[in-house]
Amino acid sequence: MHTRSLYYLLITILFFSLKSFAQKDIYAGIEIGSKGIKFSVIDVNNIKKGDYTILAFWTENIGIAKNISIDGSLAQEDINNAVNVVYGNLLTIKKKYNVSDENIFIVGSSGVAMANNTEVLINKVKSLTNKDLDFIDADTEGKMLLKGSIPPTEYGDALILDIGGGNTKGGYVNVLENKFKFFPLNLEYGTITLTETINKTIVIPSQINSLSVYKEKAFEYAPVLREKIKDVLNSKPMSLNKKKIYLSGGALWAFTTLFYNKNNEDTHFVPLELQDIIDYDAILKNNFTVYENLAKTNKNADKVINTYSQRHLIAANTILIASLESIPNLKSKKIYFAKEGQIAWLVSYVVDRSKKIKSVF
Image 1 (cartoon, one colour):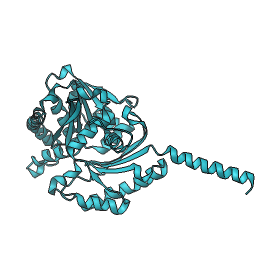
Image 2: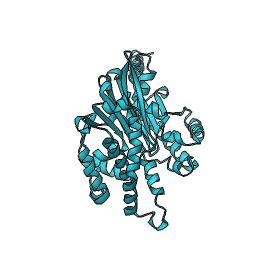
Image 3: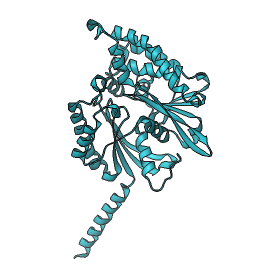
Image 4: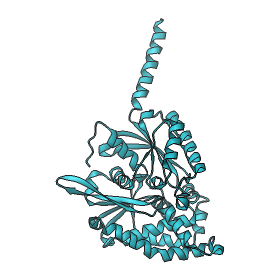
């Protein structure tokens, strides 16, 4: 072989070896949620210290769980649509980001896990992608949220809540016998399930499509919701003593995008004020055209409006307000939107499956 040919061969081998090596710390996650499917790609340096870079995050608005509230099952058509979207994006992740197959995880959220026919979804995912689909129960999801969203130095003083499509989950950590112990919190309502619950209280057929009637029913249901939230928090009274409240989920993404209308990409935590959330609630119910007009010129606002209907946004914010108002001495606490909550489960997966890192709890 000529010297020049050998040189180029060695360079080629070195290039692909380095490329392969460079991708070993690239991970991707696909989360099948009640309201949509989320795709995350992260580059990990030292994940224990929170040293990782989000290379990409995107969502496909596939409402796989929209029929759960009707008969408890995922519709076959919705399953087919969701898995086809998973497969297409899985190919994109492998090709565009060169993520190895063993570094790609697929999970179903606790909201989707509520369905009585999840085995159909599991089998469909396996047949099309040749990958296993794991489901995260609400307690595990809460732990993953905390581990993936909050630095360990903040664990002792933090409460986290995530308002999802099918439920609201979270929890907190206490130190017992020199070890962290996680205490989960779980509320049966999320954005979609509360919307459907309120819709079912409208019994007169001619009023089903009336937004004004929906708003009245949402107002009437708010005290019931508040009592349920208080019961959840009071069942774990230490949750009421935490000084920092971290919030995540679509409800928070919608609020910060529409109300603050600014780029928060440079920070992991966005400070929040209850009064802002209350003011936002008034706009949702009484002057929604403000946000519809904003969506015409703001791509992020447009994404919110295309993801959630006005009813969904009202329901989501009803849960948010009721949750915060159920916490005593709220003015003495700090409230944050934990933006990385959207990929927290993936970060936790990487932590738990890494042989180099010992989990703290």
